[in-house]
Image (tube, rainbow, N blue to C red):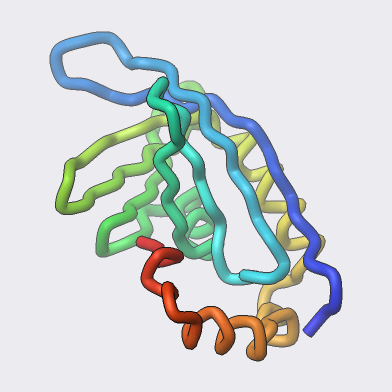
Amino acid sequence: MRDQPMIIREGALFELVTPDAPPVPVRVELSYSSRDPYAVQASFRTGQSSPVDWVFARDLLADGLLAPAGTGDVRVKPILGPEERIEVELASPSGHAVFTTAARPLAEFLDRTFELVPATSEYSWLDFDAALDQLLAPNSSDGARD
């Protein structure tokens, strides 16, 4: 466990893929905190007042750069073609969306996270006391994540 969490933030441009229209650009802020070393958060700025946040495994994104990954609400896969791109598919009870983005910036973001917290060392960064406090807090459901 480390005393001070370290955070990496990176802006990215994703494109929302729709069946009957051209792709729609969507600004996304990717963030990674050493306090939650297994996860990456993506905040989708959809033009609404607050962003739509998704939290998923860092390894899922890394695996999805090379081959199809994910079996649940988040699926990531490389797109074959002249440009190195990634497809990110998100599903929830309230909807389904497919995005594409350039692979290189995503890979560079992930490289920075693995430099901060190397693979297989995540466990040593966990703050079990803080996690327990959050779980036992009276309004702990307010911080629920997908």
